[in-house]
Length: 78
Image (cartoon, rainbow, N blue to C red; front, side, top):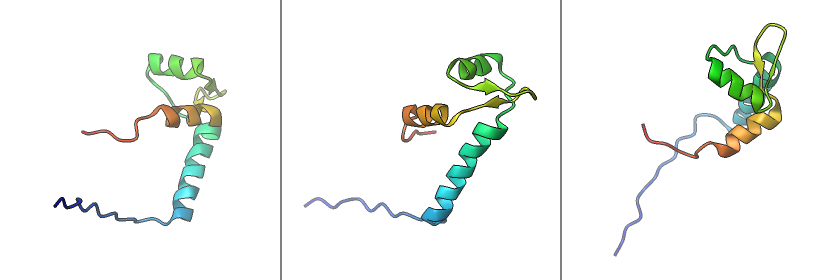
């Protein structure tokens, strides 16, 4: 007889709050941008569709953020 492992889940935030955090993070990436100091990362981001604002920050449009999320691994081990 095999016993399935127990995998408890702890949720600290409700779904509406999680959705708000994600929406605000996406808004920050698209409208405030990031100050990138690594030239290669900056080049890759700009070539992938990012844009530099007048202050020099790199803006990440929603489409670019979505592509990055889709291509990211679902999990990883440290």
